[in-house]
Every structure is written in structure tokens, then in C-alpha cells.
Image 1 (tube, rainbow, N blue to C red):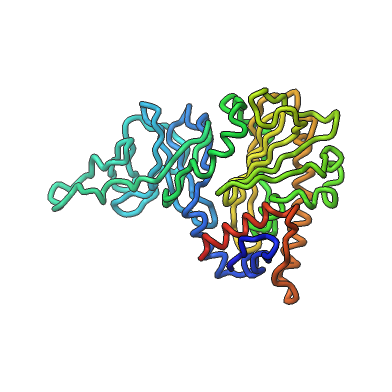
Image 2: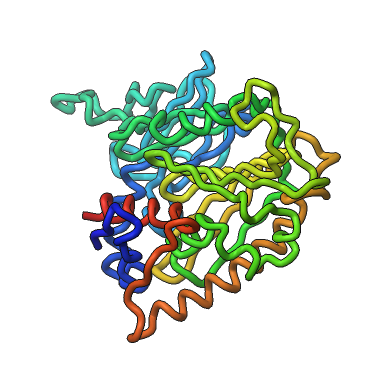
Length: 356
């Protein structure tokens, strides 16, 4: 699965990456060793305990985010250290501690085991193994992420995005459930990302969207664990009112498309942010979560971010076609356009590095 670092000489990743059950299972370590979006901080304001499964239907690790009285956010294993019961089932309010409804074991908001009935004569109790395992958690703006390994610092993934669009008042963007939606795509998760990571297909697949872009000025910038596709609009298209301090000042930018390895897409439009999370289910089935955070609702129906559902349907149709194609006995690898597919090549080199 090695991909040549030089795009002019490289071939795409082997088609088995998209079609093999064993490679799909092996790819779990990609997600175990990177950062995953969990929720947004406003979701912890009214109820401070947020249980979730780390990548449902794939890794399925039960975890729990807790915001304590000092507004410090922690993440723990959501499994009781006594007999393995899932501790918190629903988004709820926890005051100073929480307990297991199976045998009454109690934990404080730091995950420490503080009480267990009928354990007076247990030698070595309590010990560190009675406490909940703490999981690496971090926040970028109001967005909360966790990592099962925590080996890579989150700044490696988000610092370049912060430098570029840090002038945006992202904390003021308001989550809008009515504009948020889930999709299921009959394709491998990485194929969906491949499609996102290049604008090469826009004039062929997205005819209406293509009318808004200056296609020849579409550009990609690569960073260690992320990249940016810069959407330049035609004259008259709704664009960002950029501050003079922005490196993009003077450009007619209608969209910033930031991708964060391995499966997060931060699409900034003049109306706000469409955050897309790509969640593997099987080698040929993927869940896509669209989460909308609105900054200026008067701009929702104009510009490049105005008809996201139509664009998504067009993308799904072509990606599902590609999934059928890569199953062919006559297809193994392709080649990259050095001018148009640098984002895909960058993704494939990261995949090959992580899956070794």
C-alpha cells in the first residue's frame, strides 16, 4: 500500500483499500490514532454528561464526556470498572459524581472510584484500575474532539486552519439542527474523501456549482495533516468580506474547504460552517453527518453554500459508481494529475503511512 511521495511518479492507492474486508478492519488504527469530532460545547451547557460511541458501527468504543463545575471538560471510558456495565446511557446532568446502576459503584467527575458497596474486605481496593480510563480530549474553538491514543497533538491537525481563518468569529456560529442531516453512501469512506479532495470533477459533476467558480483559479494548499481548497468565485458571486490582515485579502473567496485527516471537512461559507464527518460502517457503506453552524442566516440561500443537498446527491451518485468500478478485476491503480489531484495524493500518502 506504499504511495510514492512524488505525485508525478505516483499511482493511487491499491483498489484493495476500498474493497478488502481485512484492510477495512486494519484501517481502524487510522482512526484510533487521530482525532475525532465528538460534539460542540453548547451541547454540554444544559446537560453536562455526554455519552457516545467512538465511531458507531466501526470502532464502537463507549466513551463519556463530562463538564465539571469548573467548566473543565474530561473524557472517560463509559464502562464500569467493576463488571463492565455501560455507565451513562443518555445525555444527562451529573452534579458531583455518577454511579453504576448495576451494583452501585460510584465515580467522581474526575473518573475516580469513590465508593463501592460490600467491598470492605477486598484487598488492594481501591486502586488505579478501579478508576475510569481517561481519554485524550481537546477543543478547537467550540468543537470538542477526542483521540483513543492521544499520540499526535491536536495542534498538528488544526493550527493551519486557525492561522488562515482565525479572524472568523467561529464561537458565535450557532448550531442549526434543521439544516443538519445524515446521509448513507454505498461506498468506501476513503472514496468519499477522495472525491472531496479535488475540484477536478466540479465542471463534470456539479454543473450549477461550476457556474459560480473561477475554475482556473481553484487551488489546493497542503499541510501535514490537513489541506485547504480555496474556492475563488466569479465576479458578482457572494463572497467573504475579508479583513485587511488576511493573506487572502483582495481575493473573491466564496468558500474555504478545509479537510482534516482522516475524515473531517470544515466548509466555511459567508453564511457560516458546514461541518461534514465521514464515518465508516463497512468496506462499501459510509455514513456522512452534515452539521450546520450559522453565522449570517441572510446568506443561507445564496452562493456556493446555498444548495448543499443537491451537491451531496451529485457526489454520492458518482462515488457509488466509482465503488462499483474499483471492484472490477480490470482495475487496480490509477495516476494523479499533478495540477488537480494534489489533495488526493496527499491523502493517499497519509493512508499508506498510517496503515503500515
